[in-house]
Length: 176
Image (cartoon, rainbow, N blue to C red; front, side, top):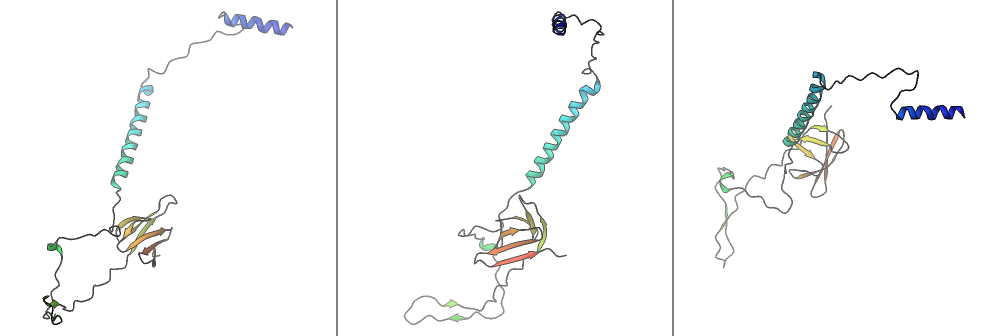
């Protein structure tokens, strides 16, 4: 019972602001808010955060999504002045229309067959499971992007799978 009474006495003294007997008086704590370090350190931290946000914004602003080929069903035309006219030394060959038609004769000059487009060349892969991307023929591509007559189907750590509209696939690998 005496222990409880002693604890109650100490509690009353603490409420009155008197320290219990035998305890040393408390010393005031020095304030550091007025020092140079206390003012400069938060300013430096804020400056570094603002600089990091600026550089992150700058890096994201430079990345732009570009369509490499038009969507199917969209017709892309060129001005007539930019279409090259093949030069041929052979005289044009005209095909006569069947008798009874008034349509003009058509030119059926043999044009050389169009050359097949060059094979795409894989130049690099940056693989992250969330958003892999690759550089093919100097262009940055992601899964689903179009590249000429191909669509990027899959990007793995060492390969890029391209798919044509007819379903045929082409796998590009990194050279060792």
